[in-house]
Image (tube, rainbow, N blue to C red; front, side, top):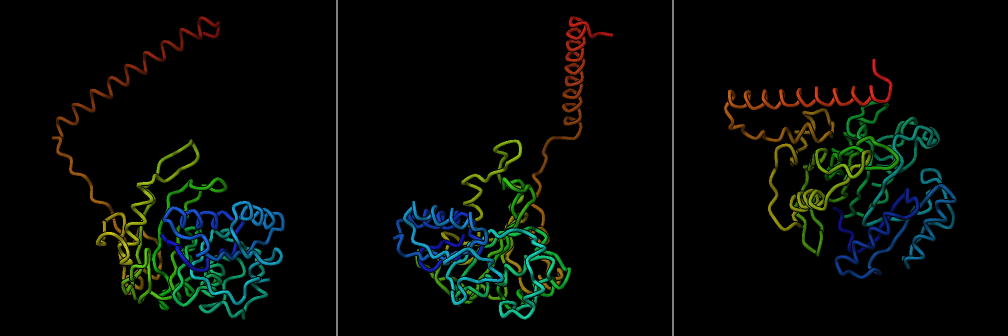
Length: 328
């Protein structure tokens, strides 16, 4: 969705460097030059930080992950960085992030995040490190879209009033190995009035608007516990976003049940809650052309056949138990 062809790419919770590897693959897939991307990151865990350095080194990706591991909130290793792109999947709902010691931090332009939850600390840290025309993609728990506790609702309202939220995508559950809870994608933008998008195309003025995409029904169960998106699913989300931004290959249209371009007035009427389902509405139902009487006859026949099959299977099971000596 961000299309990081060229510029500075930053991940404030980079883990083992997966986001960076995907950025490089994106450039390669679009025949760009790897050197056009400058990579910056930070990781608090020492072992994971070392793994990230090794992961990038073996792929010959030049990256600045800081001179050491460090806590992003309390030891910002890139204080002067203003990134063109931020890609982040930070840990959700951290309650022990030490926020009480950072109440007057200059990064909290829209309000001090609550000490009991770091979600809005991540969002504001990322906005602080965005270049004037930068964009960011952040994965967060769905609670961040509607929470009003401990001032989070007021922070969200101020971010929206400042026009920093470009798009919200509600994703299906079971996409991650580590958690089955559904997540949302926040796309942030420092400048929605202009800019350059994919393949150098100019972006349209999106001031005062937020695009909502409800992708909860997309994807398929790859295993009993893991869901994945098909290439068609991904393309549908990406196409809707880029068409709305103005750098896509087609014209954007609202699709009931899937996407909706909402105005600031719409957001205010919904109490500044960013749950896409509130805005996109319901998908139109397919008309059922089968007459009611015919449908009931067909369904009743199917049900009787299923009852008969159930009776047959029960008889087979009882006969097998009798043969094994476990009958009544």
